[in-house]
Amino acid sequence: MRSVLITGGAGGIGRGIAGAFTRAGDAVVLADRDTDALAEAARLPGVRTVPLEITDPESVTAALDTIGPIEVLVNNAGLLTVHGRLLELSAADLEAVLRVNVLGTFRMTQQVAARMVAAGIAGRIVNISSIGARQPTPGMGGYESSKAAVDALTRWAAIELAEHGILVNAVAPGPVLTESLAAAMPEGSAQRIAWQRRIPLGGLAPVDQVAAAVLFLAGPDAAHITGTSLPVDGGQLLG
Image 1 (cartoon, one colour):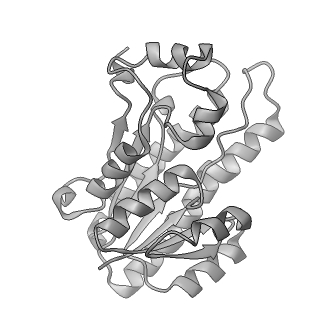
Image 2: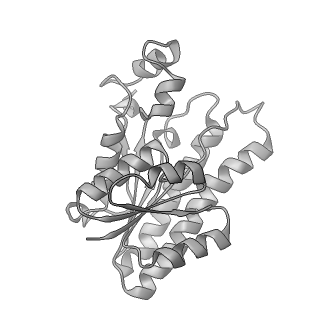
């Protein structure tokens, strides 16, 4: 049984990843800044919860002290809802995205990895990236730029932590069919159809497929894989 921390754990993807790990017999801690959603997620079987704001150093330290040793970190927390075209997006909005998606992921990776090294834990870190890091969509460039930085951070951490036996990888989904996305893009809507036409296999990524990729990269069958970003996109990057 491993200790697994999932940030942004109260959301649909976080809960899906949690389910994959608990079914594998791991002890899961869900962390999120949304305390109401976190209270709901606490009802899931086999999980603990802890409030965490990844942009706040004091919150990170307090949460990690509470959780104790961590063997697997899943950096799932991210800001997706701020969009705008290049000539329209404000610098303040871009800064907000970078603060969460890049600096927050960096802070969690740095702090958890430091504790792994100090404890002699050959752990696993899996970041949630996006195929948008490699394939632009008009109006989503701020988010996509942040995920390109997450991919670079993944490689940076992988090369420097390899000597400690810590593997660092990323999972890069296309659009994931969470409850919130399904509500925003209902089946048959023009926006949903437009996305599906970009995906050779058709359909949006099921949450359990993203979770399965995370579980694989955190597990023994991926023991010789580090520094990669694994697309879960139905072939969208082929377009």
